[in-house]
Image 1 (cartoon, one colour):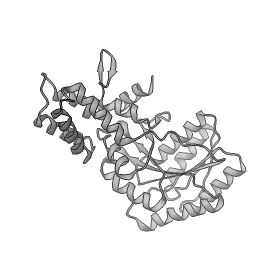
Image 2: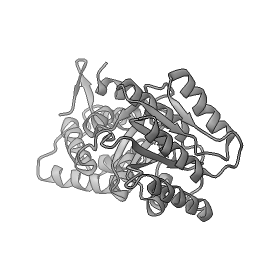
Image 3: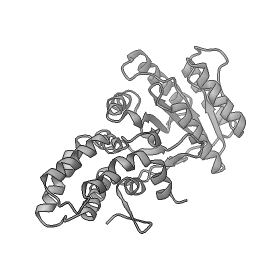
Length: 312
């Protein structure tokens, strides 16, 4: 199964909210008029495209008046082009350009952070890389236990403290040191979930970053913020404050398979200016995809013609 087909299947709820409802708008050969564009704007808002929905529909109206958009296929094609312009080119996978490459992972409670780390580690292992995990979430024992279970099953190494409440910066130091000593290709460091409004805990993240950089100048080489896609527009404010506190370099959008609000990808990308590195599309370890803008947009706005995806 190719990337487009995988995404179309796993993003079914967002696809239903956008592509299938576009089909409904044009049912019976309905012409493009102000009422149709208003309904299209509403369905895009419902999918959490956000303020961009109004901008897109205003542009569609202008194109229609100029005779460049005449029917459903034209609307889909124009939407595809405009959405891709907003997303920009894909950022690709994390480049493992250092040995070890240190990846710090942050996010709010319940965002899917620990699961995303396991998926990311699995992905690198499938590529033949030696992975070491740092269980820096020392406040929630279940997080470290979860990572350790995954590590044991898959032969990855892990650095953790056995007691709750240990200094997360100390764990990060130990993980980087172990990664250097053991010849790891990548060190992925978990952190405790925290609300973006908890200034003391955000300060702790800054300390973790400083300690990592002290042990290995230039690290962390990537700081990934895991965002729960089901939070839609609410995720944007969270991401803004994390970005200000810990110099986030990229996003992982988790739980996209479980939401009809996948349109938030466009708002998050546009308002934050951060690359979307990966998207989580299911519970299994292999269900973490490098973000491909074209495949993503096609999966949610294309329609199938005779079994073949058409983007007009």
